[in-house]
Length: 363
Ligand code: SF4
Ligand code: FES
Image (cartoon, rainbow, N blue to C red; front, side, top):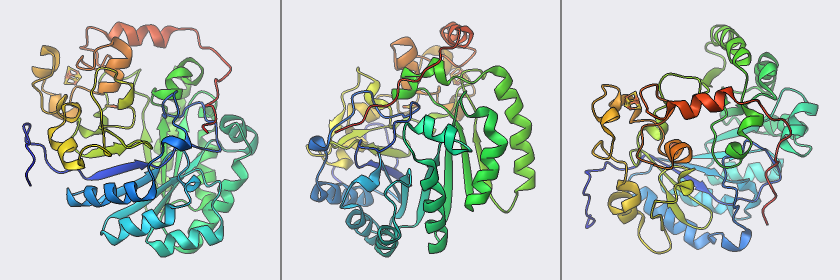
């Protein structure tokens, strides 16, 4: 390979292909940017095929087709077929809206390996209020269709103040849907979720009540349904190991071809992001300033560079550091050693607002 690799990066493992920002749902916890891209900016089929080929050439093993709602792309089956033909594992991240039996058959025939279905709540009234549209009844239909194909099904539920009290019912609903895996993910505050942070932030009581419910379910459902609980990181002492290190494992491609080190990295205005229409993926992965910015530990502040957890959490989340302090190289302010921890404590102490700003429709 004729590309310089100044930070000795290893090949990426996975690629998230955000095919579109268009989506029939309006979830206020969406991590898509506030400035949603319209259909006119989207890469065409040929450009995606080329990117997927390049991704496989540099080592990508898993491709997650995501969005927005990837079913909004008419060429989804073609892109799945192309990716599966390259030997990659293909996951579809979907709301289930637009998934018909015929459509699913085409996607399975094209080589789809796994479906991740989002669920907004345990009952239609709550879930549809969060989705901003009638979505809940589609979940049962979509899950049933997926199960009948024999594909593994993951259910993903973003948790926040409006649905945290339904945790036990949400777990029961995922069992009813026949999920093989349930991801219960406390909201991470990027994009629309950051805009709605005060409205979404669970109470300390809700988080405390969730623990025994999750523990119980982990024991009861062992071997039947895998449960992954993603904790709310603001109240924690240490930050999350976001993306397992910057530029270490994964690439995200935005609908317009912008190549991102993580799905939220577009928010870091100090980064020089590049586009797959203009430079090869190999060059961007190994040699771009954006991907090299926070690789390794030479960018870290002394707080992290001298800390023995730096290889466990990599100094936390770069996007969170930027969004909360204005400096993407700062120690993640969730960390109790960060000089900016007070920012997080103030947010936790703020009176909570109500009334979501729903994610706008994109064109
Ligand atoms: Fe992680 Fe840095 Fe905090 Fe250490 S100081 S725990 S490396 S964020
Ligand atoms: Fe971007 Fe954590 S979300 S580095």
